[in-house]
Image 1 (spheres, rainbow, N blue to C red):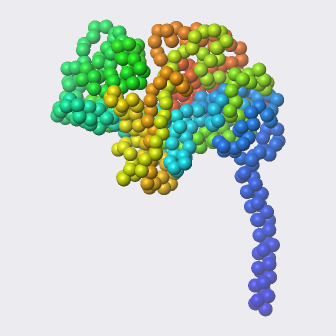
Image 2 (image 1 turned 135 degrees about the horizontal axis):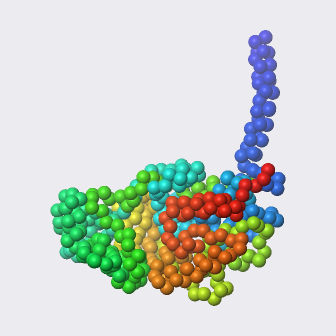
Image 3 (image 1 turned 180 degrees about the horizontal axis):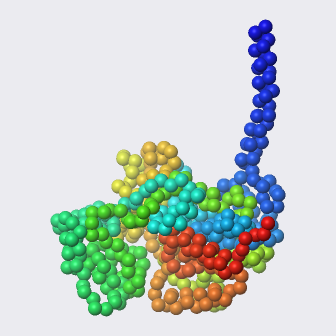
Length: 450
């Protein structure tokens, strides 16, 4: 009798599990798909999903916004338009990935690398910190950079950059013990100007003194800008860093961290699998601008001079970077002592070497790999625009573009390229958030009616 009861119980349990199994299957389907505004069922996307590469096919007839550029500025505007106002956006980018210059990936060696150079997130702005925490888990990381610099005996030494007390003691054989002594040492080498510095050289020496200028900043500036400091605008070198303490951190900001799963994953959470946001990659705005879907506002995050190329004005100047990737298998597993090592000296052509294996947000097991990947960086005039060149000619030219932009109907410009200004990541995010606020306040965009 007991056996029969056990069998009955077993059969009943199986029957009871049928709805659970069905629910589990439906749930599995649900988590792999989402429904778009038009009611279509879409498979959940990642940054390599085929639907991102369909060009202008399969789009809605109309969007509230069209955003040109899937980097920080464009992603923030599209995300805010959706989360705050329920507006739809079509985001297009001429590159084959989202994330702009923040894009990273796990390479063929199993190491997470940033394709466009090291990106270190840091901010003093609570609004920015709270915003990015919505889209990533962050690993605390305080960046410490060093440089290979020749001392007074012309021997190469590894010293903290920005230079601090340890840097000065190592390079110049001094025995500075505290901030007061450090400031006195610097003041002995800093001229007392009764006017504003006239060029980059005067600005540099007025900030860091002649000795550090000659050993670090003069040769590094030549490599970075292909001009000696005396031939550069004083503003270029107005923020040269030097520390009067033993602090060897690169930044002072309260919040310093890296996204646990990388920046690309953060952009996926901002842009993808949102029924309000459609993304299309490998799409050049200038090739399809006459065939765009209907839209209420165009948000342009690219170079402002490119937008007005038909006006016949000259281009704004930028400096770019060429990256040279190398794979090594050193005995220790690491190529160099720190994540980033600067090379200001003229004996090598590159400005710095980055070794991503040092970063704390590597995939599991990456730190134990026998090999490592390094990127050597070379500054150049050709390539992707990185650093605006501030001089009277470019400032005057940008002012003309600004006047065009102010009168452009149905278009707003945002971001470092559109602003012809270098932004740290947090500055780019804050700039986009504040622009979004302004668009709402001015009534240029408003909450979609139910």
